[in-house]
Image (cartoon, rainbow, N blue to C red):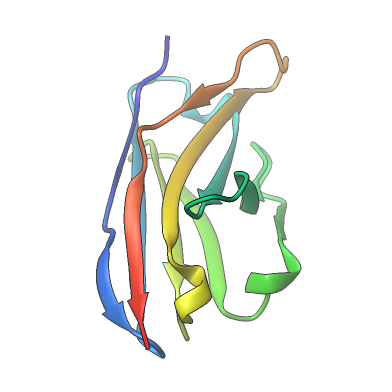
Length: 117
């Protein structure tokens, strides 16, 4: 069982920046593909960005050039640097972990990001 704890959310003005963190309770963090998803009120959860165990990244089109996903395997931590935030980025952001075997799917409880106009 892997526990994921997100932090770093909050209220920010449009154009501002936030850095989200996700701490994973596993000693084998390196085998996990990690991702950030978000869910706005009344909408479905959607992929924001993900990074494979090998370090390959991909992003949703709506965050390309603004958000950067990274991982620190020594600290068992996933990050999401969010720049040039827009009101439409307002959502609860969730951390996700999937092992290389794709046999499990773990979620954190989320951290709320609110962007004011």
